[in-house]
Image (tube, rainbow over all chains, first blue to last red; front, side, top):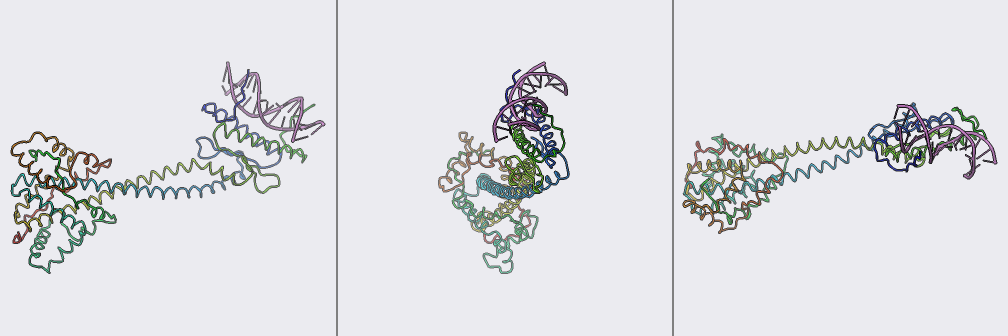
Length: 232
Length: 232
DNA sequence: GTCTATCCATAATA
DNA sequence: TATTATGGATAGAC
């Protein structure tokens, strides 16, 4: 029977490859043993199997183990080096992801906030009939300015409100007092107080987000709305 | 000619031994290369020559460099394995960081929002004199409810707003007109429109954040406020 | 190194 | 797994 000469190339068929591997592997071992004995030398074969992390070594002598151990140590350093690189890379990935997330959350917040303002004002308008369109506009502007102010330096606002407790001016005094009143009543869920504010940004500087808030040309445009207020 | 079968024992004759050594060594190299290629694996032979302290390594030459390369290759699998572990670990770190960031941003948002409401209402109160404390409270409640509603399903609101385009009722009609009036006065940048909303949560589900908003016991209660309404 | 007779490794097959 | 035909390896001669 004709046995074709195998081409020296990767054997795609898995079973054939494994068969060849086993046969040739044992042959190699045999040859290595032979040359060792015939020539009186130390020799070994190291084969890293397809799916094996650890290499197979023949023969298994102390010398061989030494060599292998040496190389293993070498590769260990290399491995650690690479791992550190990867860690750095992934850390950057984290930052990137966080940045992305941060922006996304901000975008969401922005839109939700916009919606909130819209709906709130509309609701107010519909239910109380106490304000007119101009007032709504005014209030929008007012809210806008206020938001900008708060965002630009919320801590400053805080301190102002609390510090002016003593140095109460006339006009200002009233407002401050009002705030203090609120504060003292406590409860108020998320009343602004220094302690809270300190924890506010807790290591994560998202203050910038708010500084670039679109409240500059802000309030919502109803250009395209045909709003059904029945539901409100 | 009679070719005696070589006995598997040390070849005493030096020239014969060397000859055998050279021949078999090259054969061994050849075989190692073959098995490497055929089976797609890393393999090498290490031989400690008779008088050599340093081992000779095949394939691809007797240089230590090659050995490094081989062992480098060999540890590839191991390295990848570890890299994957590290990646998994860092991915979890990312998630953790993101979760932390998410919560932090939400906390900030919450506080800012609270501040916003407070200041806005107070400002409104001071400047326009159109509403009283009860109205402020009502509006707060209103805003609260509205916020909850918006947060629970902002898209639904959006659709409602846009879909009712045609079905304008009488009373409603006025409101719409009013809002359109505002709109035309215009300016207003962050209009709510479907397009925007679609992009809103863009892969990042922070909707939940807002669903657990503290607006449950939310709006600051002014019930016990000692608010000075002189400024109103 | 080369050649060659022999032996062996091994791909293909059962 | 076992067999077998064949190409390759190689000891020894040159």
